[in-house]
Image (tube, rainbow, N blue to C red; front, top):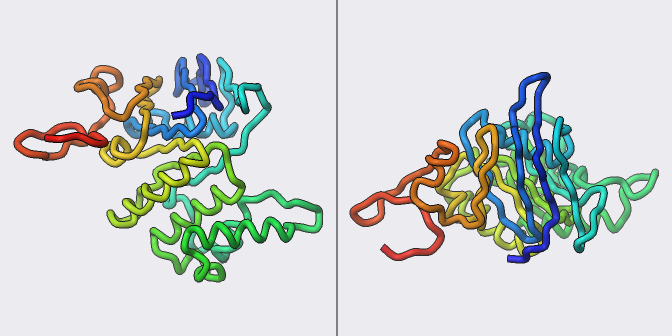
Length: 252
């Protein structure tokens, strides 16, 4: 993996009113990283992402963005929200959802080149035949691909996904992670998920968040690491005679 840092979080505290929900957060995200963020409900996973996106301001510490080793004011970020938070009754087409991921080029509106980008990403995602369809007519997998297209249309340096594997079936989930593997060649990925098993099978590094953050540079975690550090949940599966943690590639 490319070890060029693009986001550096140092000693960050985040609070709602006087209640500190994240304390002393330290994390480096690298170019082409694939970081899985796991932890219990209410532990601060979404707050961490909102802070990276600039939607929450730290009460202490700093977040630095870098490009080619030089500090910049921001970087291009694409965001895929939880599908359950999307109002599918809203009268908007797949095409317009994806187009909304771009900022208008001119005061007249979107440029021809921007419309071409939308067409290209819809074709890449296999959604070209659904362009004029209302999002209320889509299956869970089609909606996820639409939202992912919106997040990718601006060619982000970092793609942030909040529970992307919720409300989709197992086949669609496998296809999603296969697609993300291709996306990861172009963008760093930060993925929040409650599905620890799927995360550990697909990401390269782990951040376990429960009020603070513990980082592990590999998805293959030592026995007891999550329990010792954060009491984070972990799925066990049966493989042979004994259940064990899910690993990327291994033999019984």
